[in-house]
Image (cartoon, rainbow, N blue to C red):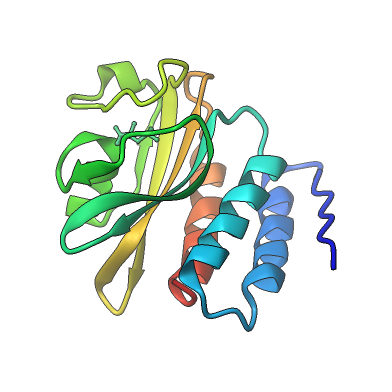
Length: 160
Ligand code: SME
């Protein structure tokens, strides 16, 4: 079986609607969290322009540990409260950062990154992990990207 998603919508909300339905299709009926994170990272990487990293950190015993991703090798363990991902994990709030160099404690895994969007993935009040997107373009992520990625996170919360 081959998956060939050609997602190129005219506007951002439509792009994320298409992405969400493709993700639903990919994860439906599959209970393995690694498989689902791997396919989600690949789908996002293929579908969203101007990313240099897309993937997951998992909550492993109160520490973020690197999960499936696309992009350059990244730091493996991030304590809650450190960096952009750690801030999302500690607060359970989306972090949408226009300029990562101005973010106190930002962890520079790839020097190319200039902006970042991190969405906590929460089920029944428990943090499962975070979805992390990095871009070389400053202020790459707007409110529509945030809403779209929150919707993707909600789908993933059911299958991680
Ligand atoms: N920059 C992130 C670390 C993870 S990498 O971007 C993949 C942070 O500050 O949490």
